[in-house]
Image (cartoon, rainbow, N blue to C red; front, side):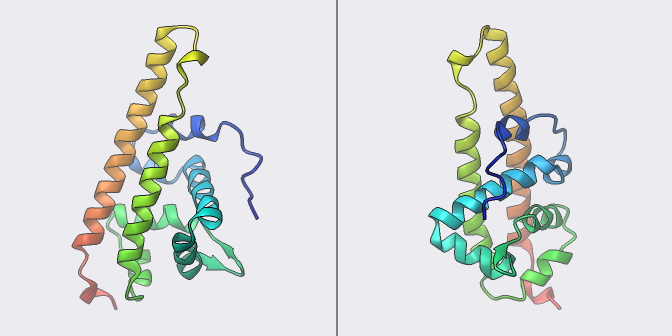
Length: 159
């Protein structure tokens, strides 16, 4: 069931008003962005669909809202949620594949946001480009930090 089918212009809301990774990861618009990606995976990416149902499946649906919370846990290096998932042998590698696809899809979505013919002035275009730039810097910061923390995590520490 696609619960986000009625959301319009979500990508415009995604990129606005973030000043930190924490603010982005815990914002409902990022949750919506994650849900939309998971819906796409469910329809078009069988290998990611299996990953999502395996780790985030709940009573026949994918609980996509767990993903931003997991990313926040990894980013913050709390590792409480991560340790739960790392009990599964292949989770780390499967998560990295998922994050790679999520990253590529996010970049594609953001790059399609600006249509130069939709703006009446160069200032409007520059403003939108700066908003995209700020979001992408925060998004890249989050992803690089998450990947670093995943790769540096010693699986022998899992209880």
